[in-house]
Amino acid sequence: MLPSRLAPPRSRAGTLRSTIVPSTDPAATHSNSNGTKDTNGQNSKVESWRSAETPGDPEASPDSANGITLTISSILSSDSDRSVDALKKIQKVLQLGPDTGPSSPQYRDLAEHTEGLLETVTLQMAHAFDKPDDNVRLAKHLIQTLNAFCDNPLLAESLTVDILTALFEELALRLLQTDDSQDKEVKNLSRFINMIMLRLFSTGRRIAVFRWVIRIHRMIRNGLTVV
Image (cartoon, rainbow, N blue to C red; front, side, top):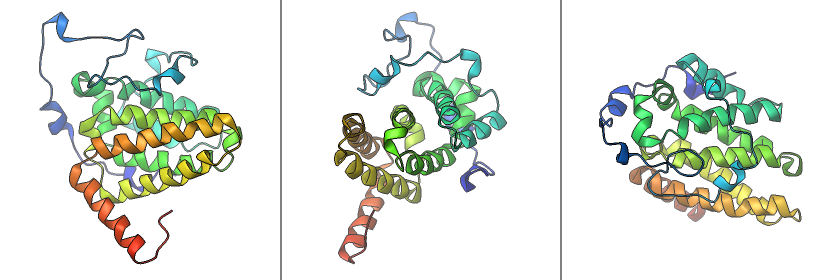
């Protein structure tokens, strides 16, 4: 079953189209050594994981709004390989970046489902970390997807307080879990989770992040458990 936020998407196409600036100057586009475009001059350490993965087939990207929803729902598969394949498709679309992305139909379709995507990633993260030793590859791709998402400020700024709260709580719980792990590979995930949390703070809509901080403060003050 698809996450609740996947049905009827709110239109953001107008906003995305307004960000497209035609350019005929070949020097305006810079690519890194992997052929993907650098976004905001950031070269995340998470990229190092991608070198061990076989590059995705360009034809494998979702090719319609329906394809996007099916891809997002596939992330929740109990088959970790199928879930990873779906995450790689989403990463491929996100890697278009905020400059060239809005001109892509796949990117615009994904923009219609940002909340559903983040809900799904949050849910699958709980599953992956239920047995982290067996799901390191899946956990890495969930983190990679969040990292690629943060490279797209226009998408990150669309997140609501509720979505951010659920995601931050899940990340905080997994940060504690991985940092406490005796398994080196699992423990190594903690620093990447920490990095993602910091990136969400810096790229999310300021008012939404601020409201989330106030909500957490009230929960702590009232003696409630945050995670």
